[in-house]
Image 1 (cartoon, rainbow, N blue to C red):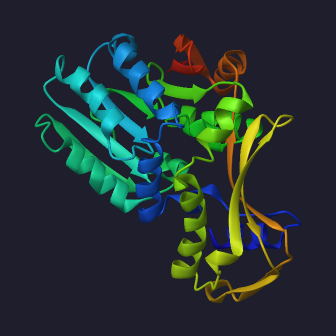
Image 2 (image 1 turned 45 degrees about the horizontal axis):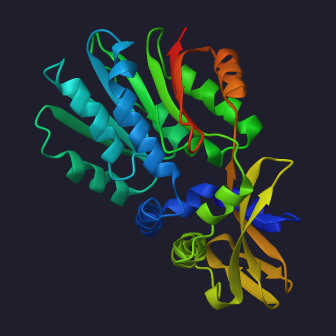
Image 3 (image 1 turned 90 degrees about the vertical axis):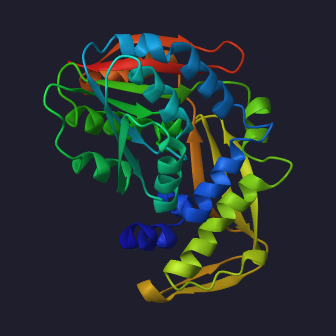
Length: 308
């Protein structure tokens, strides 16, 4: 992480790794974002999962254990785990998140499900997949990647990510993934620049995170959040723009960086996809798209990919 931060801050367009957004406070702020009226992704995602989880799981006969990447506080995992409770006596659920607080929130959300055993792995998605505990003999594994978390990756990274997921699966295992699809910027931009300012606080918290953990001295009052639609790249870009010249030191990295007035720090990207490319990436990664559903009001795809 140190080298990613260093290289990002020294680049011509200063950037930060998106994982920095999801410290304990950032995870709480993101949970608040999912409740905002402008942010329909989470509500549509949850509604689709409620409608189609049973059919998705029917494609995995026999006992199943569940891995979720970025479970938040476990509300979506609960939908899947309650479905499994009707067909198997016990389920192992593995939650992978960079935030320890999110994992603990997930445990609390699921603690009344007596048939579910929760294992938390505090790590990035790929590190967590690399360090999964041994599977229970005879169990298939389903990886949940919901909330359109794929949007955090650019188009090239999305394929590489799916390849890494495939490496963690055996033939007959599955990936259940949701991905937000292309839509009008008039719908998208307010979802990432809400009237209450929660998304702005979520992005500015990355500076708080750096001040706390890397000994930085960012002045939050010198940076303003903005969200822009990049049509060519098909993504929303979140930036913190300096309102005046700034000089910032990060003690842990022994690094000093300067910002000119008007210069931006790129903190977040949220890409949009189409169903055809999702299926093609799955095929190239060794995953067969067996079933998908698309919401017609707020276009979002929920897809089942089986390991081949």
